[in-house]
View 1 (cartoon, rainbow over the protein chains, first blue to last red):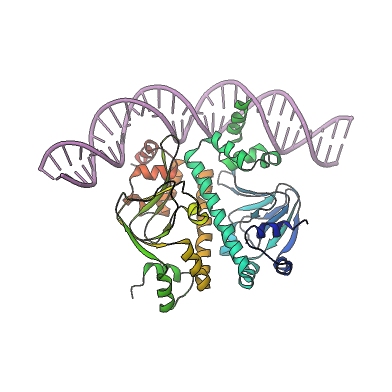
View 2: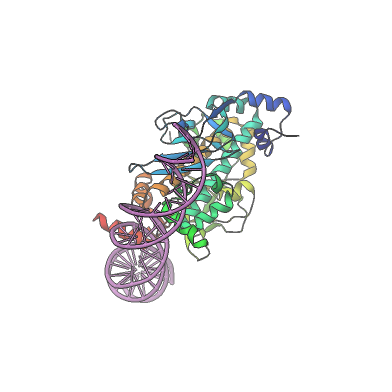
Length: 191
Length: 191
DNA sequence: TGCCCAACAGGACATTTGTCAAAGATCTGA
DNA sequence: TCAGATCTTTGACAAATGTCCTGTTGGGCA
């Protein structure tokens, strides 16, 4: 059997009947985007949290010097949005766009809360996902505190081996907090 | 009326009756620690999430070179623990200790879950706190991506103005991911 | 097909930050 | 109160990283 990717992810945490999963799915909207399409502009509200079914998105911010900083990539089975704008219903300070043609399941905050109330198992799921996300961010911060650019790069390689094949190195550099020139020099040493 | 600090924090998110708050409190244990006391050793399990009533704690890690990296400070009304060890019931890779004599309200994972089941409002509270924590960590990462040591320092000053009075500068440096010499040079320029 | 642009590598130099060593300053407990 | 411990500052130098630039490559699109 070929389970739905969202169902597979949910069932790593809580088990669902077929009826329950259908009910869950009713709260999502299918949305597809083209490569380079901007899904959320800075300054807009963030009506959706996106579950990536297929494709690749990113969250980034432009600083005052016009430099781009990548906060997060979202490959298949990742959730991606501007968390602050989404949860606080404020205007976004970040941008979400697509690095590939992308299909998503999109969830509004209202439907997320409705779903959590109707199906406590889903509240558990969302809570554990958020907790795990928190832990992952802590690890990324520890990486900034204790590692130089080279170590951060190799940490990223082992953490998300598929990513580097799909993303220009300049963006990897931006995610790591270094310039593309610095990253280029690091990878040179390997050879 | 002089509300309990924990109650005050909870009621910023959900309202409680006196009975409900008493019920909440029953799930916590009062624990007090001395300055310099290690509350959680690396390698130990993390049985508690601590709500700091009075005092100051920190979470840190020693890297392989023996250098100390501070992941988080916990002043009054902060929650502090090794999140990964606490939630996953694994052995801690971090250390929690006290920078001042500290009084806490300590919560086990079992009691946290019990409380969440018994009082859905508390589940909402914990969920929102975790979400806000996630957002705060994202901001700290963006700060690492886009700011140099000087900007990160001033960001910290405006974010937690009280902290610098209570913490040695070497620890501030460690939290910012720079050496104490670098931080010392930054603050010199001010004058 | 051929052109163009994004991506990448590399050099030369500037700036930031780290390292090591030492000297002051401040705190703290007996 | 004093003496040791801790914390902070400072200087000289090294290493890491950023900036600006140029040239090459290779793939996508008219």
